Every structure is written in structure tokens, then in C-alpha cells.
Image (cartoon, rainbow, N blue to C red; front, side):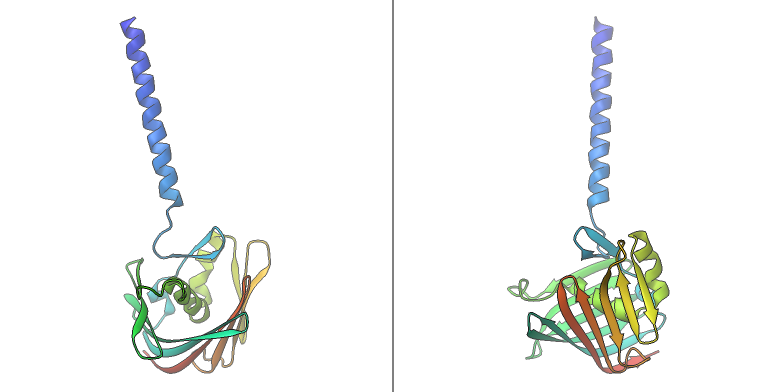
Length: 203
């Protein structure tokens, strides 16, 4: 009898252990990494590293978002080195209202208190910049991992999902992506972003 109780105790312990490991494993899988951004409902993509841009960059840009016939503008400062990326968005009166730091595959973000519901997520601003500026080779593996792809012609890119639908069209006014205006049209949901580089230094 005592042997039966002992065996039962071992079984209960083993089941509890396996259940704990299973739950822990599920929690680990479902937790997004800090350098992942949602590009569609329940679809996360891992951002390329700063180094994959291929050069160091300091740029002042003006982002204009158009949605439901309403325009919103966000002046942005971008600094990229092989080791890190820093992004800051400013109000029309010059105050920093959002920022983001990306280093060692870790992202930290800041949004001015009280503006969280009216501003885009810093990660989303970064994604829009990286999908337009980083080379195709930097995006190949992260997008392949989720079954998506990025196609490029001379002055255009298309972001295509795992069902073959064109999610976004990116059009360049100039072959040098840092000159002229970049127009990013996201078809789902329907909004347009233009990115104009006002000044830049590239090394």
C-alpha cells in the first residue's frame, strides 16, 4: 500500500513538473522580444539590427501621416551607428514627445505622459523608417521567418504578406533614398506616410 502511495506521489509530481514546464514554455513562446513589432494582427517581425543599414547616419526628417483626410506631422531626429540606433520625435514647439533606443537587440521606448493615445508607437515609427531605408538583404530573413517578402524595383518597394497580398507600397522620389520624398502607403489599414529627409550626414 505504501509503495502504491509512493508511486502515486511520484506520478503527481511528474505531472505537475511537466505541466509547469509546458506553461513556462508557452509563456516564453508568446512573449514578443523587445525588437519585434506587430505588422499585422498577431504577426510579429524581428527588426534588423542597426549595423545592417551598412553605414552610420545622422538625419533630420519630417514624417507626415495622412489618415481619414487628416494630416499629422512629426519632426524626427535619427542617429544610426553599427552599435546602436537612437530616434527622437518632437512637437511643433520643440519638446521631445517620443524616443527610442535600439542596442544589443534590445529596444527601449518613451512617450510623453498623456500623449500615448494620440501618438504613434515609437516602434511603429522605427519600423516605417527601417522598411524604407534598410537594404533588402537586411529584411530577407526576418520576413521569410513569417512567410512575408519585400520586393524592390528601381524606385519602389512592395511589402507582401504570406497570402500574396500587397500590404504596402513604398515609392521613392530619388534613387538615393535619403533625397526626395518617400511615400509609404499601407493598404490595411488605409493610411499614407511621407518621409522627407531635411538634412543628413552619412559615413
